[in-house]
Length: 234
Image 1 (cartoon, helix red, strand yellow):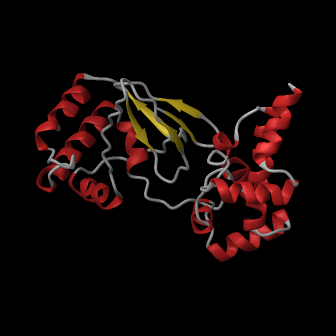
Image 2 (cartoon, one colour):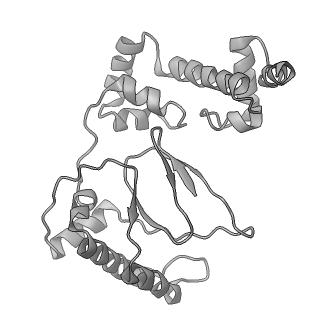
């Protein structure tokens, strides 16, 4: 599996274990082997982490690394833990609620024993601080999320996000995102010689027909026409 967070690309190979950080925008690409793709996801939500911290007080250091994914060292403890989950799963591949917290606690103890610095990741309950709006939006415009989510991740209320956005970009978030995504799509079609079906999701559109309509409105040509003209000129 590969993941992209707007800055870095992360590659996860079969057998890898990783921590996916909260409050990160990430796009995944999964690669099947023999038409199979299997993963185990264990969510360590804030209420669980707070209960854990009450039972197991730990120092919470500042964790300087801001990567979206942290690779976990492969140890016999992690290997054994993963295999220990199998008897607990029900027919719908969800772990039985009776044992879910016990297994999550076991995993967290294993991780903190191996690397106490991870406490700075798990027990950081702060909300995002107000950050540079222009840098964040230019890095993350491809992610199709709500304005409320953009606002939260930049450390703003929705109203202050819209106000700061208008001051910085001279337009509304909706119009800026639409133009930015279409400009990026045009670049990928004309310079990277990709097909419309390879582009529209990549730049933040959910629907191909809506993408094609908006693209023609802005450029006077359909995405297919732009792509075909570039292929002809090659």
